[in-house]
Image (cartoon, rainbow, N blue to C red):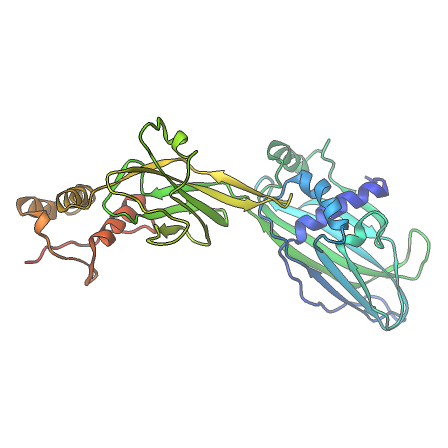
Length: 393
């Protein structure tokens, strides 16, 4: 299938910006396959990082066109070419995908540029912006999947894109080659390979979930500094805590107010409520609170979007001994009664309130730390397991 050159440029830019993000390719040696005379061409090919998690097809094909051609926009890839003698070189690009939708490589794009004249000892430098309209890298030929009609494996990828507007999860490869041609007129034959084929790879995993683990919905907490835990496949989360004030009819209404805590967390799945700091107001015993997360990711339109978790409520209990130990014992009993019933019986016959010290693996822990351990076991965080329990005089 052959398209008009103006459309080549749009689709090529989208394909290259998509498959090169976040990859750094070191300098590679050239390969000669024809007899002399043959130029000694040296290629340095680099792909530069763009801060993106989710790739929307519309952004990649259309919105990035202006971004790639703008003098202020980022450079997605660069090519530095030198030769020991004058030569005409052509750049070949092939873009394939091995996705969760279709296993095995499916060709999404392949193209070849018109020859570029390289003078002896005079390096030339190209970037992704040179693929723009009027740029220095004109397309000689190109083929791409048709988003309007397609058959076979590519059709499944097209259907997945239509359903979500996102590029599906999978492994995306770009193969880069450089050819030498003596001809200065189409079809530029004969051509001889002088570099590549060299492939680079990008794995795309679209973020989909944010799950609250602890505190669970309805929990009663015996500390004013609860320990929050969650699961998320986004790079960042924003933890927000709101008070369920008198007159508030629902958690959804409560989170429209001023948060007690609003903190962005990067590269972690837990946070202890800060005891000090401008981004946190103290929690008060006897009051009910709501917490939830926004899982933040960056899209190919250069903006942030978020996955919103469900809302969980918890109550901070007045830290009197009676309230503290009754709550802890109720929670601990649920964890011990199946595997360690004799411990439950021994504690019930005695007085749990008068247990003076708690130990974990031989080290004494506080009541707050015991609460954190109980929460982690209930939430299944890191698959904790109670191996043995004992009571000593």
